[in-house]
Amino acid sequence: MSKLACECGAILSDVGQEDSDKYWGVIYPCGEENSAREKASQQIQSLVNAFVSGEVSKWLEEYFGKDYPSDMELAGCVSDILQVCYQEKGLAYGRCHQCRSVLIQSERDSSLYNNYAPSSKSSVGI
Ligand SMILES: [Zn+2]
Image (cartoon, rainbow, N blue to C red):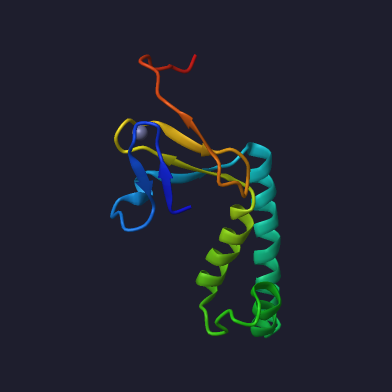
């Protein structure tokens, strides 16, 4: 997602804004987050096994494709594995910098976002 139009008229953009990390994120239902973590753990273990057996380049090509850099450090590979496993599980959201509404992706892979405006009252956990 690069731009969203909020109901207040503001444009939310994740490109070119210095502090965009403060306004964009991903929501994971607990089951989806657990599934992503388990899948990532298995993939990282597989990468470690490939490292031990000296077959990291082959593993990287099979997992990420031929264009993936074969000289990537393991930490970067792990980060990319996490990104792959998690990005297919969550719903993206953006928070409006003007009215503080939250726009949540209606479904995974959808370009439709539902707008949730803050109420005048805050809720407190009980
Ligand atoms: Zn707004």
